[in-house]
Image (tube, rainbow, N blue to C red; front, side, top):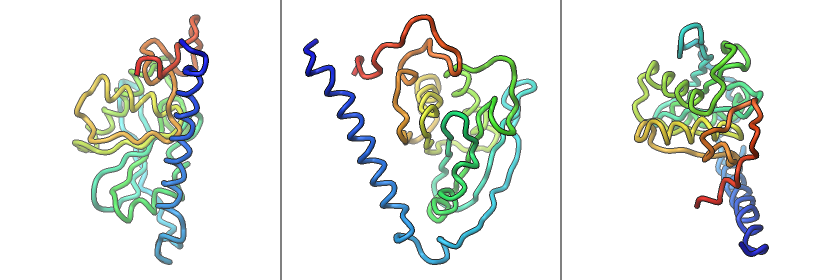
Length: 192
């Protein structure tokens, strides 16, 4: 491969990520919301959903009406990280947030920290909440969960929104969360 070609993909991906982030910020900026929305102090409903034996995930429900939107936090964060954004989104969507296993108040089993298991956990929550085809929105490492849902449960969701969530975990089956692999993953965009 030409040296110039190998650097275009990361630059393009970075540029697209910045443009998408700017668009989201503009769409949901305080200036675009009514005074009532800016002053909203809605507290989400909280429940725990069993996704496997002895594994329960914290699920937040900010309510709202319209299409179901499920927020997935980045690594080390809980669904509570969306506390200021979710009430704004709830003006047009029914908004949920899932805290993955091993984080926050969700169970922390000794195993099950693979991209596939995280995706299966998300689908188990969707099933428990009776959400037939929601849109998933994920930040950072949540991209692995969304990619896994898309790969292993085709047609289960109506859309995926990646917020700075690209990486080798999205295409590399052997990648495991919090567990280093012996072989360095290949460039995530090489297969496109």
